[in-house]
Image 1 (cartoon, rainbow, N blue to C red):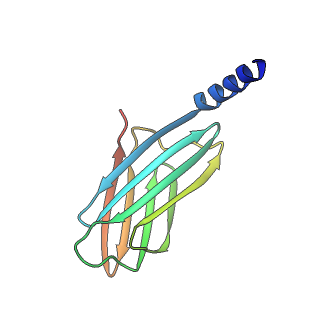
Image 2: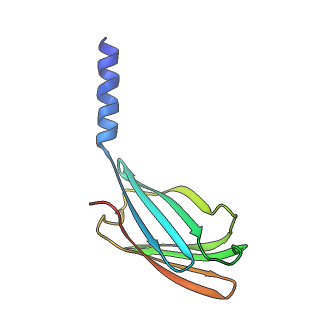
Length: 122
């Protein structure tokens, strides 16, 4: 009984320390979701990029994600189902605020679009 109570309290404390919120945005050819989770003093992000255009999906894209004091950019092979990844960004750093905006630039096949991701949480 005592172990059960201790386990319950530990789980309760761990969930109380985790905060999660999300951003999303859409352009003519792209849809993106960006979820931020702050477990303890770290920042974890889950990113999803989906091609919604009418042409065949591109094989490669270049992306740039900018918000507050952080920037992530790179090239990626684009699979038909879309891109999705989760990463631990840093410890003891400042996450993007819930009311912040994230600017995403995607380039492919000589085209370029900019998406503004806004908070989806109240």
